Image 1: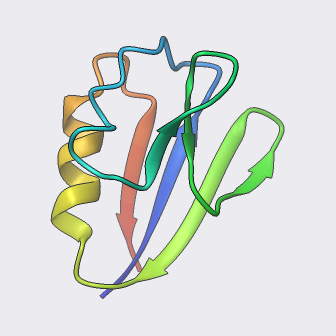
Image 2: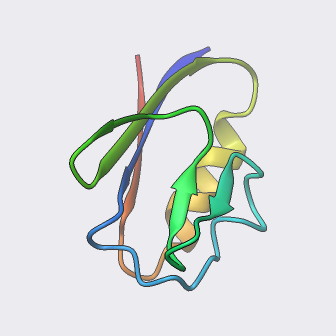
Length: 74
């Protein structure tokens, strides 16, 4: 399955609920989440993947208290 994960780092507040649900999210040096292997456009990070981990990404997005993460199926 192909899907895109988008992280709005400007909206992120460093709660890190995403890290425990999807290990593609990491803590960056600035204390905010970052998305491993993502393309960056300003404060937005985006990665398109083709794997069976859509549920992990969706759980990370749902757990984000500031809605900084979105997941879209392709």
